[in-house]
Length: 258
Image 1 (cartoon, rainbow, N blue to C red):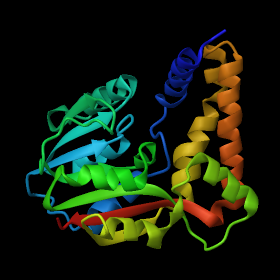
Image 2 (cartoon, rainbow, N blue to C red; image 1 turned 60 degrees about the vertical axis):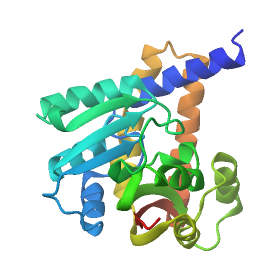
Image 3 (cartoon, helix red, strand yellow; image 1 turned 180 degrees about the vertical axis):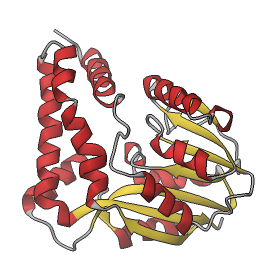
């Protein structure tokens, strides 16, 4: 029988196996990353230093590298994801603009005011939105930009089934005005905000993942643990399909004041 630690390791390995073959490990899109760049009013010709925190296999990292004159440190907790990113960057001729760093986002080895931009799509929830914006503030230069996407309520009230699911899964889920207030009280000035559209969830994230379920189960011997992961992912997908008008990811863009 697996102990708790062994089971966590097994679950991590299964999640890596499920997600590393897909382009995105969460909702998003190349066009939406480009929209965030535009709303940020970034000088595309200026030399920039960027940290992409929780980069996964690098969907956003690669867009940033293509669009900006930047040196990007791509950070993720899973080396398997970074290996995929490194291969993709090499194939696209972008390796010279991207370096990878395998570490936890709550223990980053960066210096104070080291970066012009901190970018994080669909990942800050791992340490919580408020902690992330507080902890990462010191790594930004004055006037530097924070660009993060965060699960966000898009209506004032929700069906009880949906409310309970997300309260249990991520208690910091909230409306955009509350998230912006967190930014304002932690040394940032809001610059822009938009909501990810449905295709960022369905076409870019959920459908590719669903298409990999059969192979994933086969690779893992249809084990109980693998089946449980598929069951939970399927539940999340059905919940989104039923209640998608009530929530999405919000993309928050803010500049550092202090």
